[in-house]
Image (cartoon, rainbow, N blue to C red; front, side, top):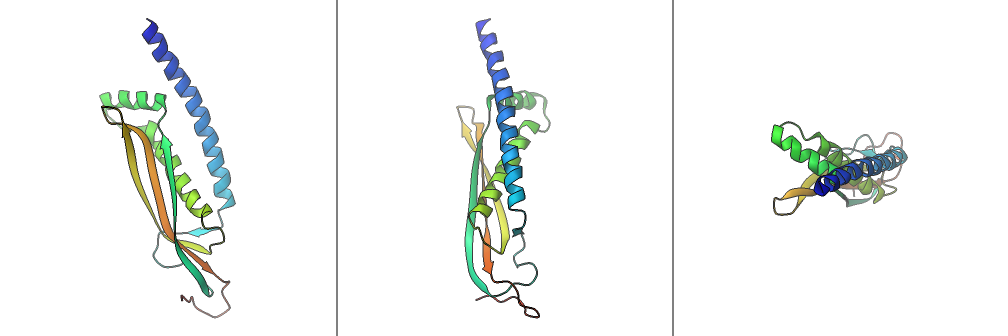
Length: 158
């Protein structure tokens, strides 16, 4: 009986604390995305529109590792019994992806454009049964720092 009480307590604690922390993280993500919304970011290999004189081009990265809470792990285990989408992990991956892109943008303040954005994901397993313990997302791209375009001139790269 004691084991069941501990199990239910951990699930309840995991659920409420996990939801609170997830909600707080989403609020932080939304606030930072609004602050960086003007930075043009694309997965195309060429810059969008017309650029002025290009002063600098650099590889930029952003990395995020988000851990699975106890409730999500238990809920995913139950879902594995019956099959279907693991919706409990979808917010985990979404938060990690958005956080990695934000960290990438924050690492290149002042860039005119960020092009050729790529995202890599991996799971970090733990325990004997190789359960997912964390999700890692790496975002990498090319940041272009250029002057404002002059009227009638095309993009130049040096």
